[in-house]
Image 1 (spheres, helix red, strand yellow):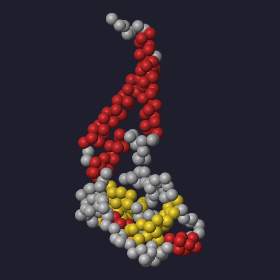
Image 2: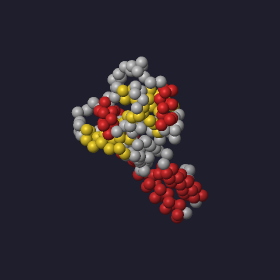
Image 3: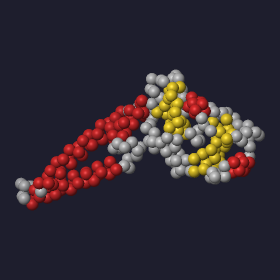
Image 4: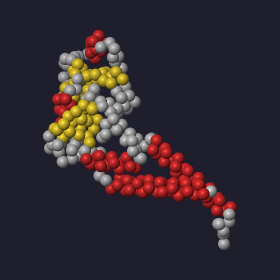
Length: 243
């Protein structure tokens, strides 16, 4: 019984610490500015779209036939017309993830000329600028692979374009499709710290389904069991009496 009492006391300390963390982070979520927490202060929500000259568009069947001749080792699952920086492209998918942030593999083909397009540093910066409404200038631009600190769920290689504004904004561009993964800044990083505490995501996986919270659930269950056993022991010994 001594072991049960010792376990219950130490488990109560662990449970209490995490409970206060939950209360504190939950209070922060109720007081925070949701726009700042998402890092979207400088995000352009409605991008201007230039009218596509459909007469100049190459037929998708032609694009597919040419691509299959040049790169037969990369089968195409789907083809879609998109627009990047006022230019139409055919987005060819070679591997489709369940969600956009899952691993995906794409190729870009100019819809007017049929030329393959690789998203290089200059194009990534241009795409980032088109979504940025702040006053900062472009700083360091680098191509990075997962894991990505600001977007831990993202599984694709991205371009990170940094701006030297007061919030240290970073814009992330998918390196294969040109998709804007998102904006991040110091406000979002501060909010992400509290999300990490609240969901016990100490491994920064971007998910509450992690071994830390599973372990804490087991410890909480043990805390309840030891408390029940201790209460039962006191009841048997007659320590609880109804007057």
